[in-house]
Image (tube, rainbow, N blue to C red; front, side, top):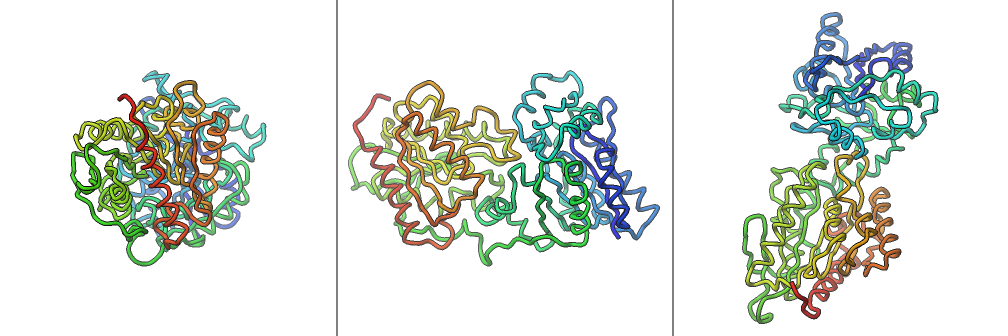
Length: 503
């Protein structure tokens, strides 16, 4: 039977696990909730050491016991830090409503509510964060399933959280990569198996590791604190996870979809690389003088070391060449959206790319289109709230138009729906390519955007792909998907060919 080391989220300690620990022990398992250090100066490394000390102590007492580390929310950071240094002693790591932090990630990046980030910034370096009042726990995760009494209990048990535990980067060597793991998704917060499957199928390549046969998944229909809202169910799922049960995910065999051929046969065009921007040029005989241009902004987040980089994949080469075949300059920017904390950096990269594009003598600086894909969708907010007159069209393809669960580090600047509703200049013509079989969480953000467009009478044209999923171009191209891509590109280029305006 397994022995569980239980590490909870911010402000809480071992007492929050009382009912779960009791049920685990009743089943014959060992259960050891961790009470993290709270002394002044404590940081993430302090909490990693707390877990390591317990691992070493349990190994001394019972060398043959299988240790299962359970990290809840913030708790996954000290769990992974400890597992990295004691990998040979760990049988399994369980992510309980927790993210997948990588080396260099700070815990605050995965907090779901931006107001928590604002609270940390407002207090500067004035000491630990005070524990939430009962009505404030929603900042740190869904409180679905908790009674008023349980929220009061959370606050009574809570202690101030040393701020460096949330801001200090996690340091990992990769030593624990081979340790089996389980994910327990608390679906009231919005993260479901369906969303995870979509990320594995069409999202950034780093998610493909979730299809490893050593990784199992479970769902609990509750909020972020299942140890309080459903302790019996949680204890049962933990025992099943330790036994290696759980749903397995799969990905198609062969090369990753993003390396597959573009769904339309388009000829190569001359390509020019200027820093982070590639320009795909129309043939000289297509038209005289400077040409309109479309800047394609790849989705994300994607790893910084992804090979090939998005601008070198058949997907974005295909889109850019298609625009060039229609007489426009097709440009692709390699921006640095590597994590949910990087939207400001990526926005700067896009702005710089547009400046490079408009300064090129082959480009008509008065006729520019911006085309944003998938997880880069929040970047659209900058160009909706105060669009320059030279931005003739803003295109969006299966975009994420509001932060998803766990994207708390995405600040209020990157809210396209709010930008559309804000007072200011009218947005440019909008072309939205919408996947009919979109993941519900993403589809909900698109629905809010289209509703805002109707309310504000924004010039929105929708290209629907009724049988298309997120990333439909990469998965079994059909006549429907080919027609949708062709129509969308032709529509955008046509918007650029209108009467000239002043720069």
